[in-house]
Image (cartoon, rainbow, N blue to C red):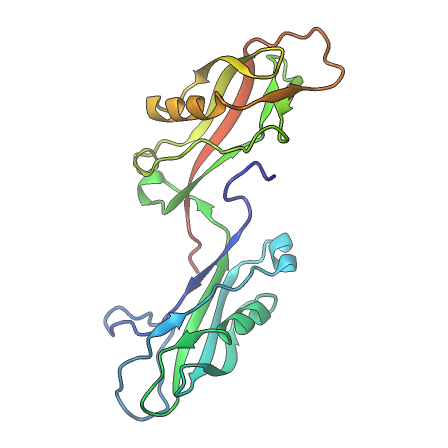
Amino acid sequence: MQFSRVLIPVAISQLIIGLPAQTQNKSAPTQENTGTRDAPPKAISTPDPPYPEEARKKGIEGKVTLLIVIDVKGKVSQVKALSGPEELVPAAVASVKMWQFEPRASGPVTRTVEIVFGFPKECPGPISESGEVVGSGRLTDKKGNLIAVVDYEENRLQLPPYPETERKAGVAGNMVLAITLGQDGHVKAIHATKSLSPGLDRAAIETVRFWRFKKIEGNVGVSLENLRLEFTFRATCNPRF
């Protein structure tokens, strides 16, 4: 079970179709081959492409621009890549071929679309679009020695929430909780030693209170009082290309 949130990159799709002229992206002009001024095709299904594994490992991001032809049945009959990182183009093309639009009364229509692949970037809370909470589930003593870890077999873990009000207010950074364990691994006492805000502290404490930990083998006779548990709260923005 992955003990993190929003660490795996997510493909973000931007469909530049059917936008009013005054808001349409100038870098992605709309073209038609019908010679008419019919209403733009309405998208029914535009699934996001998977992030190519090799590109993800290499940290490759970017925007793929495609020229597509939509037939009278609303299916994408042709796709041509105009620009974008070559590692990302096949996934974008394969995804767009599965897009579905409302059927048209007239002939095929050509449109330019963009698919953006990227990793959320840390940014100031007031302009952020999302947030993430990261924690390892490791309890350490004051010297940094690992004493216990979350018992994944006993817990269906849920990370502390990160309310939008806190994120937009600019509350972000590292939080440290002090935890005292019972011999059975349950939390006996908990409080914040490095606070971010009263609201986030309470949310984290109420979440962790129900976790169960297990001692590292060989840690016999160690103190289970005031062990450190850390979380990082980050405000993030979607990539811009």
